[in-house]
Image 1 (cartoon, rainbow, N blue to C red):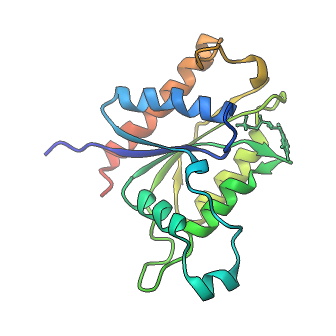
Image 2 (image 1 turned 180 degrees about the horizontal axis):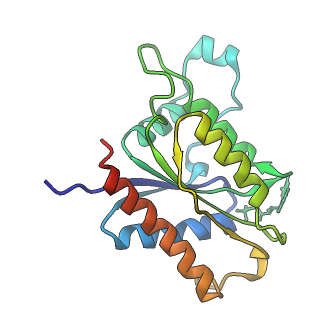
Length: 194
Ligand SMILES: Cc1cc2nc3c(=O)[nH]c(=O)nc-3n(C[C@H](O)[C@H](O)[C@H](O)COP(=O)(O)O)c2cc1C
């Protein structure tokens, strides 16, 4: 039987002209080029309240948290492009992970994260390209039992790094991001994750 890896791709930014959303588009091409099935998610389409234990206790998981969990459950690989905010990850990304980490009654704890494989990228106008935020994200994901690929891509000076069509001006960077998407698909396929 042929195994088709399923990959969920999203940026930790809701901004329309987000550099990290552009990175996702490039990496998605790389993953699709291997035959993987990729779902692109814009977190703007799944608005969530800030995590609040009282809200969870009184109303359960918000509908969009349920949708996010179901998306995570139905994919084996995660392509994430994470903006760096004050040396860490964005509130939007952290809040999405926090809600998704909450089990509904009868669900396994962290069930939508355990056993997944993730590839990480970041883009920032700064010279570090969001590198410090990725360290935080790598640690966080590892702690919720997501296997994170050892290699990652950061794009510095992102404000001048992209062509108007969304590709990266530097062909080496373009190819590194495409390859990261392809690598994630290959590894998910090799691991044959259910
Ligand atoms: C609250 C805030 C904090 C930020 N902190 C950092 C930072 O620590 N390091 C950095 O490289 N860029 C920082 N930036 C700049 C972001 O990298 C920049 O806004 C980037 O465009 C965000 O990603 P996006 O284009 O995908 O939306 C910060 C931006 C905001 C709004």
